[in-house]
Length: 78
Image (cartoon, rainbow, N blue to C red):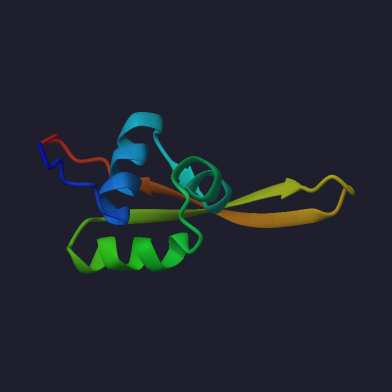
C-alpha cells in the first residue's frame, strides 16, 4: 500500500482550494514549506493562474508590513 506523498505544489494548491488563499507563514506552519514563492513559481510554470495580493498589516511593534497572499484565479469551469 504505497500511497504517493503529495508534492509541495499539490499541497499548496489543495490548501488554497480548501481555505481560499495561502501566505508564507501558513505555508511554513501548516505545510512545512519554507520557500513558498518558489513553489508558486513552479505552479505558474504549469500554467495555473495564481494571483498575488499584497496585504498591508502591522506587526507586533505597530510597524507597517506588507506580505503576499496567494489565491487562484476564479474560473467558471471548476
